Length: 118
Image (cartoon, rainbow, N blue to C red; front, side, top):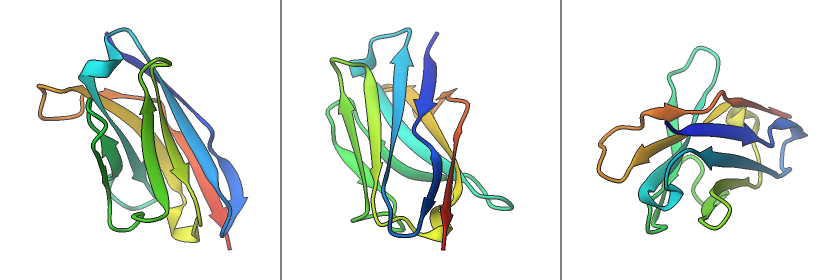
């Protein structure tokens, strides 16, 4: 069973930076694709970024150039560095994981709130 533990959310001002961390437990981390999703009030959950087992990354257009996803296989942790934050980045951010052979993300963290004030 995989368990995910997020940390690093908070309240910041527009233009500030935050780094979210997600610690992975229970399986071989290097075999899993990791992702960050977010859900704002009244909106659907959306994929923000994901990183494959081989460290290839994808970022949504809305965050490209501002957010960077990385992983440390020695620490079983994935990091989402968020720079130049905007009020529209305000959401609950969820870490997610799926085995590299699985089509859908099937393990989720509890979520961490990110609030960006203007």
